Image 1 (cartoon, helix red, strand yellow):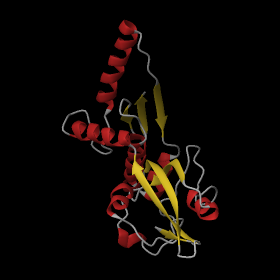
Image 2: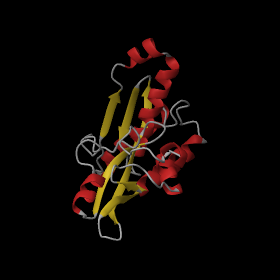
Image 3: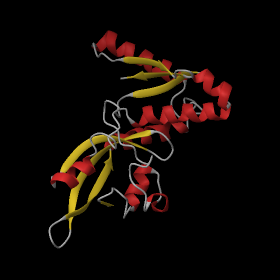
Length: 207
């Protein structure tokens, strides 16, 4: 729940679980104060341009949008946001209630990650698959293409300026940056997609 200034007045256990922020860390703060920092699929920061809470408190309309919130651990989480206005006894809008639910596919991805954790196919630092894991699934994808004409996509990516992070902030900060990127990738893939660390700051995604 937020008031007209988007100051948080109530924060339940579901919000704590999805966002990683305990109620004590957010109560009384404005939701735009470097907390959830909702962005859309284009990376536009909605707190400054297109906030559904502000829009609903202006026109009283219900809204439902797909956004990505900033988890307390630093990674992005896809959520479905629903916003409704709150009224006083005179019918004036006094604030709004925002509910967000995590993507059901995220649950599948986390379950897959837990299964991976007990095997020799997990990258020890980031928790995603390791190079052996990716090589194995790439071979399987190629076999499916040859024999069953089932296509897939492969994304190879790395983190820009990663060496600068290690050189200026230390390897511990570099490790945290890699983990944050891995968590963001894992949280925003479909249950049928796979992600692994190829080596260093390089990751491979099989879609």
